[in-house]
Image (cartoon, rainbow, N blue to C red; front, side, top):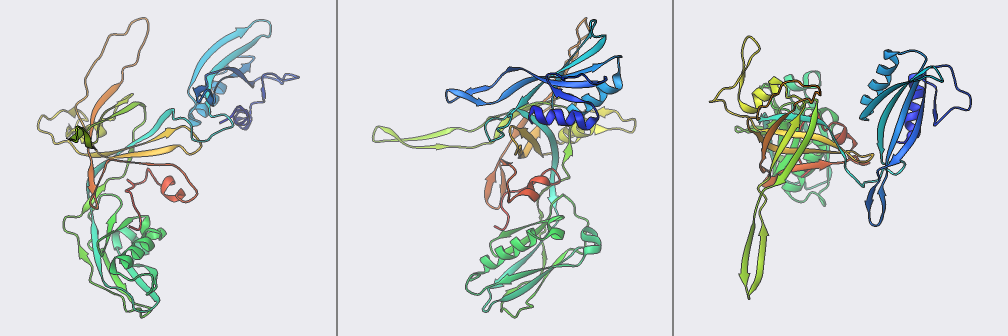
Length: 410
């Protein structure tokens, strides 16, 4: 965001707004935006990333909390933290409310720095309902095949829903390539991809619910060779053990800080009087998540505690903690990277309370985290990071709707 954007935001709220001053002051209330000083990030022997400190000033002839609230709500909406100062200007007989804010990036919003954490979500791990169908023969001629997904509960009025998959005998020469083409078609279909995630395992197509659930007894996949291609597939089968999945991500407001420290070691093999071979092991991370306050419902699931009929959070020494995915967004540029750590567990938070004195310092809550690798399709994955591009708008915009696994067609 630039100061010009901020000026326009104030005007959209109904406040006259100018940079620094008006040539002729309007009737109050009105606002001005002015530059205070620079806190640019220095790198490569230059001012590498622009960080400007600005003042947004509100002027009114009376003390008017509704106007202040309107501006403060907008600054919160824009994710612009502020420090508020108020004074009365005797000579002008005006109240002046100053909001000290920081604008990062200025007119250059390229990938240069990361500076903010927001939109923290957790999604608890479970087993997703999964169905599979195996490709047994590739096509001998060009044509189309039809994949029909029946799911009366999950797809509702859209069930059954079919997807047409074009096949070419010169391109789809193996059963694995046919399976990949089907997976791509399923994942690119709006109806199917809203509920399911398709993936290829060898020559089989796996179709799993994106959010943990196992409540549709009608779920089935059928294959029809509508174009007489000669391709063949087996029957639909339930994947008895299901596949890894997560519940719907739940937003946790009030994030203060998140840190993750890599865990692993270095294995060294010496030969010829030198380090001949060095291998780094990746055992995930240990970390901490600090929040203004963790909701009781989230803590109960994370740590295996209980909430009784009176709404009291009860620490159960024999409670079984749940694994969860931790998601969030890092600000830094126009693309705002989003991240997910797939397999997290939390330890009990330390408790600290103190009496109130002449100054009030709010207490926060901090959970210690263990972040482990998760095996998916033969790979051990730890985290994923995505930033908005021209080709992933759907995945990026829906990032907090369901945990996004790597891959796609493959």
